[in-house]
Image 1 (tube, rainbow, N blue to C red):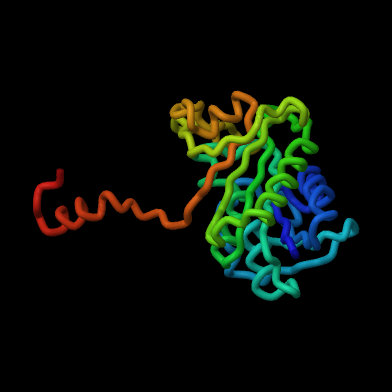
Image 2: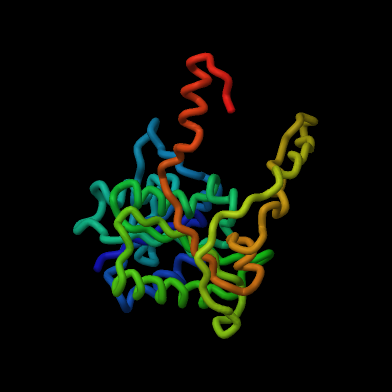
Length: 252
């Protein structure tokens, strides 16, 4: 088996190194990752300039692009043979609820799935500095073995969040749905040394929909959260409503 690893924290990130070390005994590993931190890059592709890929001193391939660029490049021509699966992470921080819309880690896994490969995004749900990458690495091994022994459909995309605790303190695994946050905090307005206004994106909103069954709740209780994601964003229950709206009828 040939597994492609990528991330959004950059090719030198501790979580990526831990993931590669944990999975290497079980598969051929190729690492293609951004040359710097590209957190919150989402599913962006670089189209207006060429991409450059170089083998770094640690043996990983670094690319001057986004996480999506890295996976796209790796699968569509850079790597031979083509990978069989994509693991993205281990992200330095959680990707819970609405975070998946912005996450470069989830985007890397999404690109793998979009290109036809099973994919897993794995994140360490830490509040400050991450402490227990070894826990998330062990979880990755467990999931890999399960995927090999009991394959899921090839269109499977798993978003995994691991509590930042020692391995022995993990309470188990839970299949979850995405929770939801309150809207983001306001931007932080400052002035640069020349007196011009500058803005920092504010922190994400607090948990809103975070009850039992959500990824937020599972992680808060010490469980590994595993959420299956789909790429089809169509809201099928609303198609008839929009059809009626277009035809001039009253919408229910």
